[in-house]
Amino acid sequence: MDLGLKGKRAVVTGGSRGIGRCCALGLAREGARVCVTARTGSLLEEARAEIDRAGGEGWAVASDLTTREGCRRVVDETVGRWDGVDILVNCAGAARMADILELPTEVIDEGLGLKSYGYLRMAQLVIPHMKRNRWGRIVNIAGGAGASPTRANIPLSVSNIAVLNMTRALSDAVSGDGILVNTICPGLTKTQRARDLQRDKAAEEGRSVDEILAQIGRKLPAGRLAEPEEIAGMVVFLASERCSYLFGSSLYMDGGDRRGIP
Ligand SMILES: NC(=O)c1ccc[n+]([C@@H]2O[C@H](COP(=O)([O-])OP(=O)(O)OC[C@H]3O[C@@H](n4cnc5c(N)ncnc54)[C@H](OP(=O)(O)O)[C@@H]3O)[C@@H](O)[C@H]2O)c1
Image 1: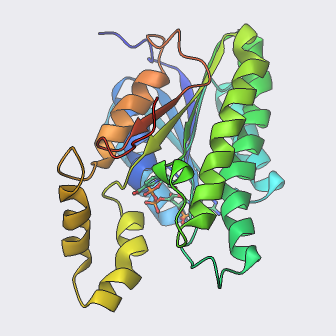
Image 2 (image 1 turned 90 degrees about the horizontal axis):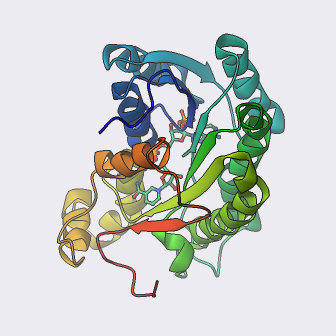
């Protein structure tokens, strides 16, 4: 199936590692031009080179997306290079776990600052360029935690649920301009971040992180955790011309974990 991604201009936030890097590579394999952004320059440079090798054209901008200036620089540099942006994959996230009874509200701010305000700023900045072409795709990576708050995961769950609300509202605002905004909510996915989030639990229980991840996976209907490439496959489809009738939706890729309907 030709996804119609050849030559399309994409920005992938959090594109230096984990799910974001897999998304960038997936788009590159379809012939897209991909700007990856995150803070750590060395990892970004690796990702950029990998994009080139995969058949796309890579570009990397190191930036902290918790600030408006940081977001603006990424979009300005991408537009300066390729004269526009067709696709935005919002994937940068770094919220920390902390028990709600001891949670400093600054930790919630941090989570929201990057994941929901950052996602919104990036969307606001690329939308005028997408409107010019009357075509665009915005794919947000939220997370299953948005619909499953626990005492330990509030910084993650509030930033994810904010992304879901924003997806619906943004979609309504731009659907008439040929711009589709959708969200994927992954369940626990095998990345460094997933490992880091289980480190305290592993230490407390005297077990290895791998053991804990495998146990969580076995309890899912899927019987295992997601690979980042599986999430990226859906992102590539949602970013493509073949995805043409999905507006403001949130897809749960959580191995069947979610009990809610739909
Ligand atoms: N892995 C999971 O189990 C899982 C489950 C559900 C949802 N998600 C969501 O999926 C997304 C990606 O997760 P992942 O597991 O792939 O995480 P990851 O491997 O830790 O990657 C996070 C990315 O975000 C970048 N980043 C962090 N802080 C940033 C900042 N202030 N400014 C710009 N970039 C920043 C990181 O690079 P630098 O640190 O160099 O900036 C990195 O590229 C996140 O939104 C996460 O919440 C993940």
